[in-house]
Length: 266
Image 1 (cartoon, helix red, strand yellow):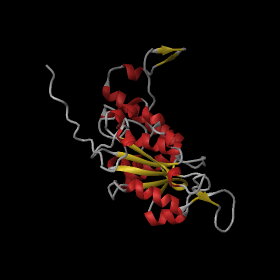
Image 2 (cartoon, helix red, strand yellow; image 1 turned 90 degrees about the horizontal axis):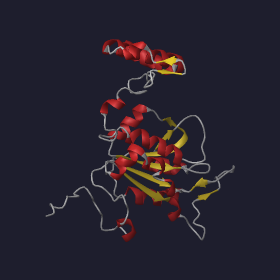
Image 3 (cartoon, rainbow, N blue to C red; image 1 turned 90 degrees about the vertical axis):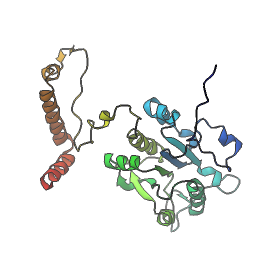
Image 4 (cartoon, one colour; image 1 turned 45 degrees about the vertical axis):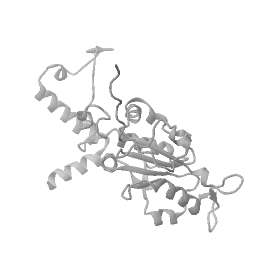
């Protein structure tokens, strides 16, 4: 005797979906944190996000990923999406009309308050607080640039925030998008399985994480610090705190100064 069929009430399939969309391994899930990615290379996704804990969470419906192929909105025989910079200059710029059409279709079913971000080397630097903000929202829409960037009017019209992975330039936003999504998705409920994991790691409390050790107790003449093997939780916690402060002060004095100022003001 078979039991009752399981409910899949979270799945939400709109009437406008095409048959091939209904056959996706990851159909749209109502009320689930969703990452929307507009890119010229949709085949790059989920990429590493489809592996390990983020991949399992994706398959289990704890978050969803949707990609929009920007090339579909291109014009002409070659589906062109860019043009030369007005006023002269090297490279190509993604066109406003092409991007606008892609954004409108992507955002059609998204909540109006879902953040929208353009991955750009001139943007605000991505950090742990920003990852927490993204995880606390209902999802994120990411625009992956290419060439010399995008027409500024698109950013102004849609009020798109610009965010950078760091002070360097990449050939496109796809790798940065995956890195930032990984940082946000792992903070979603039940993705890591152990909520304490995100409380003790680097940047969670303004400090870099303390050193970690595991068996064997002696390796190549290097022992695990005795305090970690003492079983005295108070001493272990004190040691970890001191190590975290020392590492932060030596490697990231900017973070250490910021934290010290915050503690003085509180």
